[in-house]
Length: 318
Image (cartoon, rainbow, N blue to C red; front, side):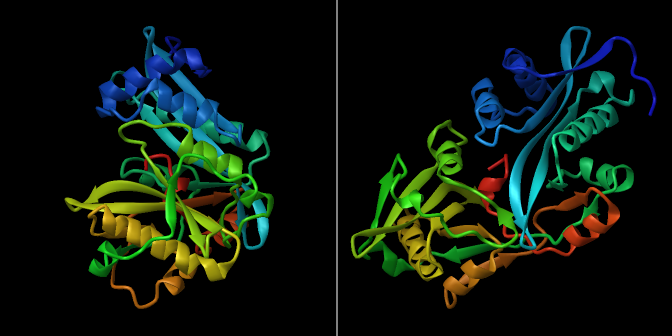
């Protein structure tokens, strides 16, 4: 890889650099979602406390960045430390100087040095061909998107949920259900992800769902528009017994109906598919580009054949 010009430097970003990162994204991407508060929350206060964040400077200004956040996934029955490459960006002023590659390789190497097992990526149209051609990624199995349409009868239906701003400690003393081929999450993660940071873009609703007045699970939601229509996104769920999943999802659908939305949107998940059998729905395929990479080609091939159970809450842009 070509040597960078001497006037371009790459350093590990700190909280003192966040204003420059925001300005870089505002200038290059017109991205108003990325604020110093968001970056501080998403990286420096993440309970996994394992991430890479590199910033390049050119002529005293932010000229590029690359970030990854780590999580533990249960994949084929084993724990894998998985890195999500989340933001690779270079400014127009330095394009063509090899900075994209330098930033990516630095982030990749940093992740592996802290014990990483694999990369999972949802790249944009620019990054996807580069990942495939230069960095040994392979296509994963793309997750479906499913919209469960609102049932008009739910407008008048009784409910057994409460909107809450705090998770119940006693509920999480018993380990919650772990989906196969999915991120491993606990109370600390869920509290951080949905209840510690609020902004116009990152605003979530947490439903505590009861059955016979007993707390049986949580649904974490976010209101968005899809094709111009209001829907609620199912960001995450937490429950103990598979038998309670259908009830948790039904209560989320009732809430979505009472908020006058057209339905509940979730990423492909066979257990949720089964729990909502008979509900009118629309399924979109190949909505997300999804790439995988292991420590070697054998692991990459294994990952490429895994049907992951992702939730929207696993992603940094929802």
